[in-house]
Amino acid sequence: MKEALNKFKSLKLVRIIGFNRVVLLGVIVLISLLFQVLSAVLNHGNQFLTYARFTSAMNYGYFIGFLALGVTFVIATGNIDFSIGPVMFTSALISGYCLNNYGFPLILSLFLCVLIGAVFGTIGGAFVAYLHLPSFITSMALMQVAKGVGSLFTKTQNVSWPNASMANGWYRYLSNYEIQTASGKVMIPMGAIILLVVAVLCAILLNKTRAGRYMICLGANREAVRLSGVDTRRWEMLAFIICGALAGFASIFYVGCYTTVQPSKGDTFNNEAIAACVMGGTSMAGGLASILGTVIGSFIVAIMQEGILAMGFTISYQYVLTGLIVLGAVIADTLSRRRKN
View 1 (cartoon, rainbow, N blue to C red):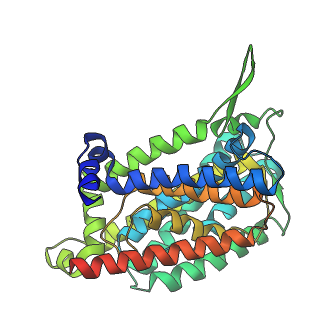
View 2 (cartoon, rainbow, N blue to C red):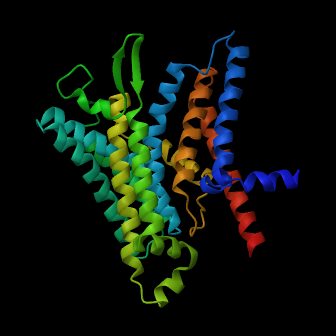
View 3 (cartoon, rainbow, N blue to C red):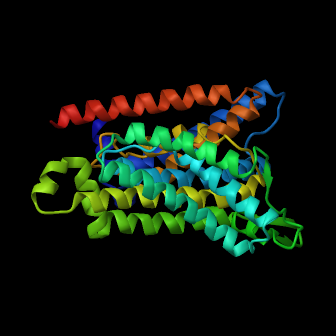
């Protein structure tokens, strides 16, 4: 058994992708097959592996993926950010309100989504990097601030972005683009394509640039980096800015799939994004991060969410599973670090 496992690990494709990432891809297949069987048994023969289920799961995976990519940078430095979900909602609320009530052009509103996220990231990064406040407390405080700002700006009203049939509805094609063929409509998952492109850019930034190497080194040994003459505050703050900007970017894909945004919401997505990071191989202790693993973890979370709803269970079951996954991944990471030490 061990010999066969070593042979599998030595395969060229496995070495390129990484054994842990291959395992995660296998988990996606197993979860999908499990929900297919359960759906057939519990729902009187209904199928889980359908085009509609695939589309719904992908829609959820887009914005979770962008949130998870952003928080990967923060976790890599040994910090945490619990404000990303409310920041995503606040970005969508304020930008959509400006679009509907103040006549902002759509392009400016989309840019405003990213800008608002980056502003929150800058504030959080400044408190953590320059004032040396704990990231846990800082992000929890900013989470409440973001929820309050979004509610106050929109007067606690829901904000609906234009639908696909309206003149400004073209932004929805960033998530899903449908083309008419002889056999019917075919959906092109533009959100997945954009997510992969952004993931590649994030991987290059994190693994191939000085900024990314400093962020990872901060999580591994902050004091050693500081003593080597590096301004750790700059790179620590940059991680939060990237995280905030990607949270704002995620809001574009959220409204592209779901259109309506509610005030004082979004905090449930924090744990799901963090779960995707941890499942993907990013260490909660910092110093180790995997962008590809984060993307795969995001789609595992999305399939779990879709599968639980397909079974007829409430979303509360997903919260339980997500919490258990995070707890299990942290325990596994802690035990792995102890063995290495």
